[in-house]
Image (cartoon, rainbow, N blue to C red; front, side, top):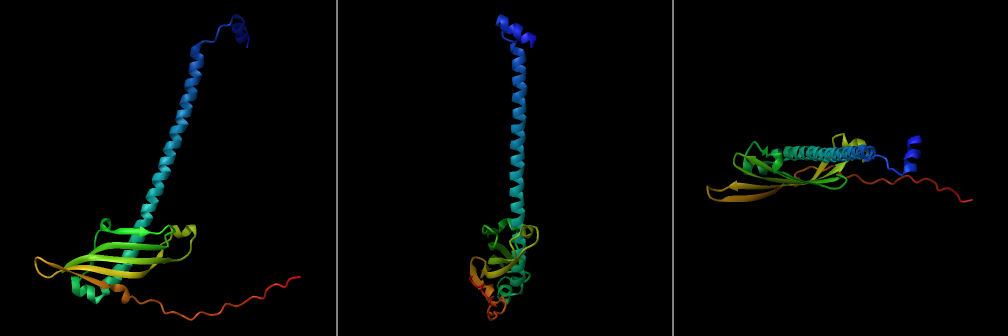
Length: 189
């Protein structure tokens, strides 16, 4: 304090080295926190994208496995491309999922000894909308399942065949709706 008064008396400014040193420390601290915030945001963003990709892959695997069960039992598909019917690689597939992951549209390649083709499906999810549903496996019901198969007729030409597999999918039997019990309405007073 005495130094400041003495310096102000002679109107001498304090040395620029001490002022610059404190400014540099403040700038380094602010840069450190800025870098830390940016790196944390990037890690969170990357993690979110990775979780979404893993979730989409799990949805694809569940739906395509159900579709392959149904397609490998279909006699028209077996006659067209032969047996065994094998699912193609996942990276050749396409997947479209709605915002809340309630419905899925998926296309993936299949092949057999006599030809190859594409299975297309549309499915809806049953179940709840809690946060735990992200962790638990989802059960999708296939609504539409079509196969477009390319069967060689001879060495030069291929014939395409479209088979509607969803016709052979057994849907649960419809039940008559029952009337809901009515509760007595409260009396107005």
